[in-house]
Every structure is written in structure tokens, then in C-alpha cells.
Length: 557
Image (cartoon, rainbow, N blue to C red; front, side, top):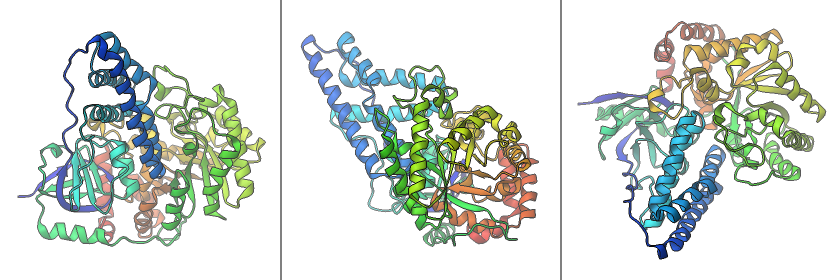
């Protein structure tokens, strides 16, 4: 008999196939003591193991693209983090612990500190444990944790996945992902969307799923069915076998233009966006030039990197976000160590007060790349909170000849004071991942808080509406470049609230375009009112899906 489980919908699409569960984690090492003569050798073995793991993850990062490459680069840096290895070395020398026990205890302490800090840095605790397991596996000579590789397509089931595992999944083999942990904006969710793999996270009862049993999941509805009807499972597989195409022009049924853009993190990501028919780039993350480095890249190096992306979009819009350092993306030449709460610390535009030269040189590089190419370049700053910060950033851009300067709206204060901010900013882009996190005060990695970490939260939608209304006073456009933009059911709601561009993973473009083409602007506004009139995100999503169910059914969403 079929059993239906529910969770957080994070990556749309349907999938059906046999379940393959993640293997048990590396076992906790026993506590045993070394002799005095063994200590130096143990320290050396620890260093070799940490560097081996770092090198392997760095190699994976080099082979990956976009968000996956960024996350792997940060995870690789953890493996050779001096603070982690120094703590473990101290435990070897002082307590005479074996290197595997020493790194286990050292990482446990650091993970607890990260969890106490709160989001977004607390999500790194999961990554740190993955690094720990890999180092321990290297030390004791066993296979590291990772995704099983059966000789057939399957649905992957587990507690949660580390970036090092998720980033290298093959969509041709991994039909879908089901996890009991994580949330809508966790690394698993973000990477699943980027890869186009249907996924549902924070699924109650996922831990009871057995290897080999047939699973049907609907990543758009957040539903997992154990032992589904064979005909239903076959139909789901058939629908996913044929992907629709995007014709390159986003619009509602009555012709209202809605730019459908792509999020891009590097030149390879730019190519994927072009192939998917993106109208341009709504979020060009520039961190790929900075991550994993001990020193700031030279202006000439930045220019060359930016040109490789801009050249792919001649005559089209490219929105460049300046460096978003801090919190879960620390950089030694920009951010400081030891902040008590990095999520609320010096990050994004705030780093310009501490290191103004870094922003100035980046704007110089963006301007030079813009001059050399013919893309329509807009520039925006992350983590804007006040009208004063906005005015300062716009002035800094103007000094470099960058005259279309805008802001990321990720802090609730920016949405609440949007009218003042848009007196200076030429445009705005809602970064829904952080906006949700700060609005709901919830760690996006905690499965227990997945319900709070939803773009369907009425409070979050209220802030989207306020931001659009404040921008409209000055006739400024507002877009969404967070993960919410890839939700085809939410897209008409965002348009109804006043959003006029959506930037997403390239694989989501066709589905979002298809839904918008079936709904006119007046209907979008009705759907927005329907969502805002709900008391919770589940009710809001259900009300909108029910209202456009014929459209979603016809499109297989």
C-alpha cells in the first residue's frame, strides 16, 4: 500500500525509481593514547591526511562550475584550516591522542561553535563534519563518505548531503533526492536546483525508507510516495524524460514583460545560461575570482575573468554583484576572524568600510571589463541596509563611470525603507535566501525550521510587496535573484507583487516561462492577494496551486 510523506519542496520535477540510501558515516574513533615516541609521527600523518583531503576537494572544485565550484572551494579550505589542524595537533602533543581522535574532537568543538553562531555560518557545521570524516577515513585507510554508485538510476535518500557529494551528482543517474534534514535554502537544495535534480528535503519518515523500494517524489509539491502505483510512477518518468524549451522571451499571457535571467557564478555558468536561452544575467557572482586565495586578485586578473562572462552576453543585460565576503565566505584579505556573530557582522557592502580599496579596485575592474565588451552592465551591492549606504555605493560606481548602480534587498530594513533607498538606487534585486533568513530568524540548515525557511512565508511576501511599492515611487525596477525565482508556482505571485525580472538557475527557465505564459497580469495580482491572505506558507502555496492547478497539471508541474 502506498504511503505519502511530506517535506519542503526545493527542486521542481517528478522522479520515480528504486531508493538507494546513503551509507553510514565514518565511525567515531576510539580514545587511545600514543607513546611519547609516536607523537611526532602522528602529527605528520595528520598534516598529510588534511592536505590530501584538501587537494581532492580542490580538484573537485576545479572540475565543477558555478555555485558548486564556490561551495567546494570553501569546503576545501576547511580541510587545511590552520585553526582546525592546530587544535588537533595540540591534542596529539598534549593529550597524546591518535590523529584520528584528535581531529574528531577538534572538529566537534568547532562545529558546536558554528552552530551557536547561527545562520548562515552555522550551515558550515555540516560541511566541517564532512571534512572531518574524510580526514579520518584517510588516516585509518577506509573509503571516504560519499554517494553510492550502483549500476542503475536511483533516488538518493539520506539525512543530508555535503556539498562535496551533491556537487558531483550525475543527473542522468540520480533521478531525485530525498533528505530528512536540510531546508529550502540549504546547500543540498541549492545544488539540486542547479543540477536540475528533483528534490524534497526535511521529509518526516525519510529515515524509514529502505534500500531498493520504489519511491516517487514530486519536487514541486514537496511529496514523497513510498510504493507508488506503477502507472503513476511510469507517467512521472515519462514526463521528466522530455524537457520543455524556453524561447528566450519571458512574458505573461497578456504580454506583460518579465525578464527571465540566469544566475551565473563563472564563465562555464555563463555558457550554460546561453544554452538555456536566458535573456541575460540577473546575478553575476564575482566571488569565483576571490575564493580560495590568500591575497586579493590583481585588477588585471579580475578584468580578464569578468570579460569571459560579459563576452557571452553581447547586447544583453548582465547584473554584476560586487564581492559578497563575510559570514560563510570569509576571506583573509577582507574579513576579520573572531566575530561573535558573523551572520550579523561585517559582510557584503560593510567590508568596504574596513577595506575600501578592495571595492574600489573591483569597481575599476568591472568598469574596464564593461568598456572592453558590449554587454549592458548593471552593478549592485550586497547587504545594503540604509539609504546612506546606497548613496555611497552609487557615488562610488559613478566615479568609475558605472551609472546603473543598484542594491540587493536582503535585509528587512532595506525593504521597509525602500522608498528612501530607491531615491538613490537605479534598481533593486531581492536576495530571498538571506531575506527569508533574517526575516524569520531561522537557520536554513535546520530541518526542524524548514517551514520557516520558505519564500511563501506571508511576512516575506509582505516585504517583497513593500520593496516593489517603494521602488515604484521612483519608477525603479525590482527583480528577484534568490532561489525563490526558480519556483514556477511562486513566479506569478512575485509578478503580482510588482517584480519584473526573475533570475534563476538556467534549468528552471523553461518551467517558469511556461507558467507565466498561461497567466495574465490581473491573475498574477489575484494570486498575490491569495498568498498574502494566507496565515502560513503551506496554506499560501496550497491556495495558489489550487487556483492554477489546471495550468500546473497541463505542464506536468
